[in-house]
Picture 1 (cartoon, rainbow, N blue to C red):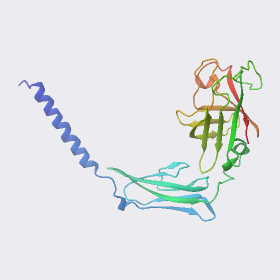
Picture 2 (cartoon, rainbow, N blue to C red):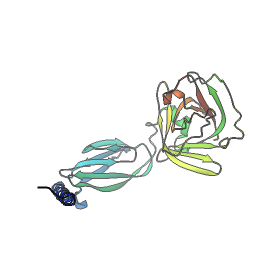
Picture 3 (cartoon, one colour):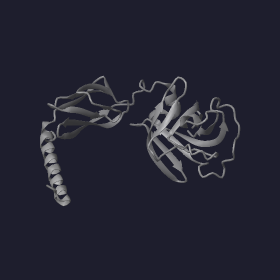
Picture 4 (cartoon, rainbow, N blue to C red):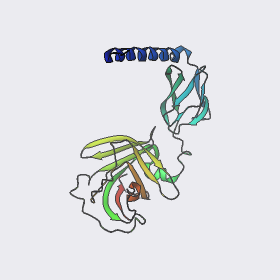
Length: 256
Protein backbone atom coordinates (compact mmCIF):
# COMPACT_ATOMS: atom_id res chain seq x y z
CA UNK A 1 0.00 0.00 0.00
CA UNK A 2 1.31 3.40 -1.00
CA UNK A 3 1.28 6.07 1.74
CA UNK A 4 0.83 9.70 0.80
CA UNK A 5 3.89 11.83 1.62
CA UNK A 6 1.83 14.32 3.65
CA UNK A 7 0.30 11.53 5.74
CA UNK A 8 3.74 9.95 6.25
CA UNK A 9 5.19 13.26 7.44
CA UNK A 10 2.28 13.79 9.84
CA UNK A 11 2.67 10.28 11.27
CA UNK A 12 6.39 10.82 11.69
CA UNK A 13 5.79 14.10 13.52
CA UNK A 14 3.31 12.47 15.89
CA UNK A 15 5.69 9.61 16.64
CA UNK A 16 8.55 12.01 17.34
CA UNK A 17 6.30 14.05 19.65
CA UNK A 18 5.21 10.96 21.56
CA UNK A 19 8.83 9.80 21.87
CA UNK A 20 9.92 13.21 23.13
CA UNK A 21 7.07 13.24 25.69
CA UNK A 22 8.04 9.77 26.85
CA UNK A 23 11.71 10.77 27.23
CA UNK A 24 10.69 13.93 29.08
CA UNK A 25 8.57 11.86 31.46
CA UNK A 26 11.41 9.43 32.06
CA UNK A 27 13.86 12.24 32.77
CA UNK A 28 11.75 13.54 35.64
CA UNK A 29 12.01 17.02 37.10
CA UNK A 30 14.89 18.98 38.68
CA UNK A 31 15.25 18.94 42.47
CA UNK A 32 13.14 21.46 44.35
CA UNK A 33 14.87 24.27 46.18
CA UNK A 34 13.50 22.80 49.39
CA UNK A 35 15.30 19.52 48.55
CA UNK A 36 18.73 21.12 48.40
CA UNK A 37 20.99 20.06 51.24
CA UNK A 38 24.46 21.54 51.32
CA UNK A 39 26.84 23.43 53.58
CA UNK A 40 29.52 26.05 53.07
CA UNK A 41 31.83 26.71 56.03
CA UNK A 42 35.21 28.35 56.50
CA UNK A 43 38.31 27.60 58.49
CA UNK A 44 38.13 29.86 61.55
CA UNK A 45 41.89 30.45 61.60
CA UNK A 46 42.26 30.82 57.82
CA UNK A 47 38.97 31.86 56.26
CA UNK A 48 40.34 31.69 52.70
CA UNK A 49 39.92 27.92 53.13
CA UNK A 50 36.33 26.90 52.36
CA UNK A 51 34.71 23.54 53.13
CA UNK A 52 32.01 22.41 50.69
CA UNK A 53 29.59 19.56 51.31
CA UNK A 54 26.65 18.42 49.18
CA UNK A 55 24.07 16.09 50.77
CA UNK A 56 21.24 16.41 48.23
CA UNK A 57 20.17 12.80 47.47
CA UNK A 58 20.70 11.30 44.01
CA UNK A 59 22.29 14.38 42.50
CA UNK A 60 25.62 15.50 41.10
CA UNK A 61 27.10 18.57 42.77
CA UNK A 62 28.40 21.70 41.10
CA UNK A 63 30.22 24.49 42.96
CA UNK A 64 31.35 27.91 41.72
CA UNK A 65 33.32 29.69 44.44
CA UNK A 66 34.49 32.58 42.18
CA UNK A 67 38.14 31.53 42.34
CA UNK A 68 37.33 28.19 40.70
CA UNK A 69 34.78 25.41 40.29
CA UNK A 70 34.33 21.88 41.67
CA UNK A 71 31.99 18.93 41.07
CA UNK A 72 32.89 16.98 44.19
CA UNK A 73 30.31 16.12 46.85
CA UNK A 74 32.84 17.05 49.52
CA UNK A 75 35.70 19.40 48.79
CA UNK A 76 38.09 21.86 50.41
CA UNK A 77 38.96 24.84 48.24
CA UNK A 78 40.89 28.10 48.51
CA UNK A 79 39.67 31.55 47.54
CA UNK A 80 42.76 33.75 47.95
CA UNK A 81 40.90 37.07 47.70
CA UNK A 82 39.62 39.14 50.58
CA UNK A 83 36.16 40.74 50.64
CA UNK A 84 32.59 39.58 50.05
CA UNK A 85 32.14 36.55 47.79
CA UNK A 86 29.41 34.21 46.64
CA UNK A 87 29.60 30.44 46.61
CA UNK A 88 27.12 29.06 44.08
CA UNK A 89 25.80 25.53 44.53
CA UNK A 90 24.00 23.40 41.97
CA UNK A 91 22.42 19.96 42.38
CA UNK A 92 21.81 18.05 39.13
CA UNK A 93 19.35 15.19 38.89
CA UNK A 94 17.93 13.36 35.87
CA UNK A 95 15.54 16.22 35.17
CA UNK A 96 18.08 19.04 35.35
CA UNK A 97 19.70 21.30 37.91
CA UNK A 98 18.62 23.59 40.72
CA UNK A 99 20.81 26.35 42.18
CA UNK A 100 21.31 28.22 45.41
CA UNK A 101 24.09 30.42 46.73
CA UNK A 102 25.73 31.52 49.97
CA UNK A 103 27.53 34.78 50.63
CA UNK A 104 30.77 34.59 52.59
CA UNK A 105 33.26 37.11 53.93
CA UNK A 106 37.02 36.58 53.62
CA UNK A 107 39.15 38.71 55.91
CA UNK A 108 42.07 39.54 53.62
CA UNK A 109 44.11 38.69 50.56
CA UNK A 110 46.12 35.53 51.05
CA UNK A 111 49.64 36.86 50.60
CA UNK A 112 51.13 33.37 50.98
CA UNK A 113 49.09 32.25 47.97
CA UNK A 114 50.60 35.13 46.00
CA UNK A 115 54.06 34.80 47.53
CA UNK A 116 55.87 34.72 44.18
CA UNK A 117 57.46 38.20 43.87
CA UNK A 118 56.19 38.51 40.28
CA UNK A 119 52.68 39.07 41.63
CA UNK A 120 53.85 42.13 43.55
CA UNK A 121 55.81 43.40 40.55
CA UNK A 122 52.86 43.10 38.18
CA UNK A 123 49.93 44.11 40.39
CA UNK A 124 51.13 45.71 43.63
CA UNK A 125 48.77 43.12 45.11
CA UNK A 126 45.31 44.43 46.13
CA UNK A 127 46.43 48.06 45.74
CA UNK A 128 46.74 47.76 41.97
CA UNK A 129 49.35 48.98 39.51
CA UNK A 130 49.21 51.08 36.33
CA UNK A 131 51.50 50.60 33.35
CA UNK A 132 51.84 53.07 30.45
CA UNK A 133 52.96 52.29 26.91
CA UNK A 134 56.53 53.47 26.45
CA UNK A 135 57.84 52.03 23.17
CA UNK A 136 57.59 49.22 20.66
CA UNK A 137 60.28 47.27 18.85
CA UNK A 138 60.82 44.28 16.61
CA UNK A 139 63.41 41.68 17.58
CA UNK A 140 64.20 37.98 17.69
CA UNK A 141 61.80 35.92 19.76
CA UNK A 142 64.69 34.07 21.33
CA UNK A 143 66.32 37.27 22.70
CA UNK A 144 64.22 40.26 23.74
CA UNK A 145 67.36 42.34 24.39
CA UNK A 146 68.25 42.39 20.69
CA UNK A 147 66.45 45.11 18.73
CA UNK A 148 66.00 44.95 14.96
CA UNK A 149 63.75 47.96 14.51
CA UNK A 150 62.14 50.57 16.79
CA UNK A 151 59.32 52.38 14.97
CA UNK A 152 58.02 55.82 15.92
CA UNK A 153 54.64 55.24 17.60
CA UNK A 154 53.90 58.87 18.50
CA UNK A 155 51.13 59.09 15.90
CA UNK A 156 49.64 55.68 16.74
CA UNK A 157 46.19 55.71 18.34
CA UNK A 158 47.46 53.56 21.22
CA UNK A 159 50.67 55.46 21.91
CA UNK A 160 49.26 56.91 25.15
CA UNK A 161 47.40 53.81 26.33
CA UNK A 162 47.73 52.47 29.85
CA UNK A 163 46.87 49.15 31.47
CA UNK A 164 46.11 48.19 35.04
CA UNK A 165 46.26 45.00 37.14
CA UNK A 166 45.14 44.30 40.69
CA UNK A 167 44.26 41.47 43.09
CA UNK A 168 41.46 43.34 44.85
CA UNK A 169 38.81 40.60 45.34
CA UNK A 170 39.63 39.15 41.91
CA UNK A 171 42.10 39.29 38.98
CA UNK A 172 41.08 42.69 37.62
CA UNK A 173 42.43 44.16 34.38
CA UNK A 174 41.70 47.51 32.72
CA UNK A 175 42.76 48.98 29.38
CA UNK A 176 42.68 52.77 29.07
CA UNK A 177 42.42 54.09 25.51
CA UNK A 178 41.47 57.59 24.29
CA UNK A 179 39.46 58.42 27.39
CA UNK A 180 37.65 55.08 27.55
CA UNK A 181 38.30 52.09 29.78
CA UNK A 182 37.64 48.43 29.08
CA UNK A 183 37.46 46.03 32.02
CA UNK A 184 38.14 42.31 32.11
CA UNK A 185 39.74 39.58 34.20
CA UNK A 186 43.14 38.06 33.55
CA UNK A 187 45.23 35.02 34.36
CA UNK A 188 48.93 35.22 35.14
CA UNK A 189 50.86 32.03 34.41
CA UNK A 190 54.10 31.73 36.32
CA UNK A 191 56.59 29.44 34.63
CA UNK A 192 60.28 28.81 35.21
CA UNK A 193 61.07 29.48 31.55
CA UNK A 194 58.39 31.93 30.34
CA UNK A 195 55.67 33.78 32.25
CA UNK A 196 52.55 34.87 30.39
CA UNK A 197 49.40 36.97 30.78
CA UNK A 198 46.04 36.03 29.31
CA UNK A 199 43.18 38.51 29.28
CA UNK A 200 40.03 36.48 29.98
CA UNK A 201 37.86 38.18 27.38
CA UNK A 202 37.48 37.87 23.65
CA UNK A 203 37.27 41.62 23.09
CA UNK A 204 39.44 43.28 25.75
CA UNK A 205 43.15 43.19 24.99
CA UNK A 206 46.40 44.83 25.92
CA UNK A 207 47.68 47.47 23.46
CA UNK A 208 49.54 45.73 20.66
CA UNK A 209 51.39 47.34 17.77
CA UNK A 210 51.30 45.18 14.67
CA UNK A 211 53.41 47.13 12.20
CA UNK A 212 53.96 43.98 10.18
CA UNK A 213 50.19 43.59 9.71
CA UNK A 214 50.45 40.01 10.90
CA UNK A 215 47.13 40.04 12.74
CA UNK A 216 48.52 38.51 15.92
CA UNK A 217 46.34 40.50 18.30
CA UNK A 218 45.03 37.65 20.43
CA UNK A 219 44.63 37.84 24.21
CA UNK A 220 47.77 35.95 25.31
CA UNK A 221 51.05 37.75 25.92
CA UNK A 222 54.46 36.34 26.77
CA UNK A 223 56.38 38.29 29.40
CA UNK A 224 59.91 38.99 28.25
CA UNK A 225 60.83 41.18 31.21
CA UNK A 226 59.14 42.17 34.48
CA UNK A 227 60.74 44.45 37.05
CA UNK A 228 59.36 47.03 39.47
CA UNK A 229 59.31 49.71 36.76
CA UNK A 230 59.40 47.85 33.42
CA UNK A 231 57.09 45.34 31.75
CA UNK A 232 57.90 44.00 28.28
CA UNK A 233 55.44 41.67 26.58
CA UNK A 234 55.40 39.99 23.18
CA UNK A 235 53.23 37.95 20.87
CA UNK A 236 55.89 35.85 19.21
CA UNK A 237 55.15 34.24 15.88
CA UNK A 238 55.64 30.76 17.33
CA UNK A 239 52.37 31.19 19.25
CA UNK A 240 50.57 31.15 15.92
CA UNK A 241 52.36 28.34 14.12
CA UNK A 242 54.53 30.74 12.14
CA UNK A 243 58.33 31.06 11.96
CA UNK A 244 59.65 31.66 15.46
CA UNK A 245 62.53 33.96 14.61
CA UNK A 246 60.77 37.29 15.33
CA UNK A 247 58.43 39.00 17.79
CA UNK A 248 56.86 42.40 18.37
CA UNK A 249 57.64 43.73 21.84
CA UNK A 250 55.63 46.36 23.71
CA UNK A 251 57.43 48.15 26.54
CA UNK A 252 55.43 49.51 29.48
CA UNK A 253 56.68 51.74 32.29
CA UNK A 254 55.13 51.69 35.76
CA UNK A 255 53.05 54.78 36.57
CA UNK A 256 52.90 54.31 40.35
